[in-house]
Length: 155
Image 1 (cartoon, rainbow, N blue to C red):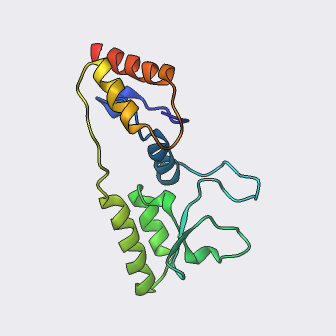
Image 2 (image 1 turned 90 degrees about the vertical axis):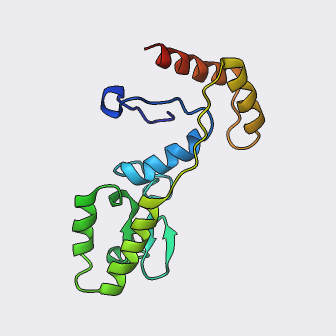
């Protein structure tokens, strides 16, 4: 999906995502992967942080915001990394509470999913109605996704 690859054996039974791939890919890049891709302004492309001083999400420039004030979203999904990061806050209970609240909100978020168990033509019609925003996909993209779905269910 996008620039992500998933191991079917590791993840078990999976469905094909036809709409919302950009959103899911962005969330996965921010929350699950170490940030090694650097954009033209020399900040890490997916290194989203929560600024504990301002209460805003930021893509930090290493020179502008002190590192200890930035909570990296890349540690939210890994309990050990998260706990180690919390230790860096010392005894500042206000910052610990704020960090816990942000992490809890992200971990507890329920993403709406609409599962469609239908034939290829019905899936294509639904997709055509939904795909009016975001990256424009063409018929061959839809066909490829449906073929993957058919192949997956045949296994």
